[in-house]
Structures are given as C-alpha cells and as structure tokens.
Length: 155
Image 1 (cartoon, helix red, strand yellow):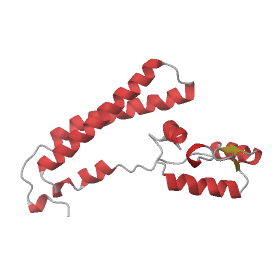
Image 2: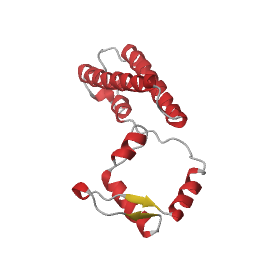
Image 3: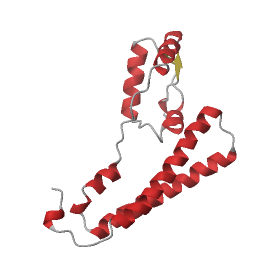
C-alpha cells in the first residue's frame, strides 16, 4: 500500500479496503500470486504473466476524462451558509497545505532523481499547486467579507 500511495496517492485516491478487495479479485483471476506472509502479516504479491498481459491491455486504453472531487470547492460553493470568518479560516488552512505541498514538490524536483515519466507527473503536481495558490489569491478578492442578504443566498 505504501508503495502505491507514494507513487500515485497525490492524484489517485486509494483506500486500504479498496486495495484488499482488488488484490483478492486479481488473485482469483490469476493476475497475481500471493507470496509468504512477512512481518506484521504483510503479504507480498507477484504479477503473473496473465497479470502482465492484463496490465499492458489496461494501460494502453484511453484514460477518459478527469473526475474532479474537491471537498473545499464544495464548501466554497455553499459558502454563503457559513460566516465569512469561518470560510476565510478554512481557505487559509487549505492555502497553507497547498503551499507546503508545492514546497515539497519543488524540493523533490530540485533533487532531479526521478525517471522521466515520474518527473512529468511531478511537473503536473507543481503546476497544479501553483494554479490552486493563484485561485486562493483570486478567491480572497472575490469573497471579501460582507453582509449576505437572503436574496443573495443560492439555496
């Protein structure tokens, strides 16, 4: 799980239950084989030849459109139901997190040790974080605290 989380966790959500469910299904289909249990009951899995073939077919498919699920945007969309101070506090906290993530990504990029495909993914992460930080600058101006009348509320 930690290997998968490190490699794709910033742009693809993973849950432990989902991983175990998928591993069990892949084992039933003969795509992976379980190895001997190791420390803390961890079980390594090996990709079978059928698994390599299935992966090659899967990775060659058109990936499809993004499915954005951004909890903060949902909160902002209904932000007229919060006090301006509460919403500003949430925005400040999320901005801080994105600043930290950008710094971590930039530090990783400066090390210049990633293979090309991983570096390309990291570049996306850096540009994404910069765009989000720019959005925080803009949203601050747009959502200046002020009275919201009942007529201005969206619901």
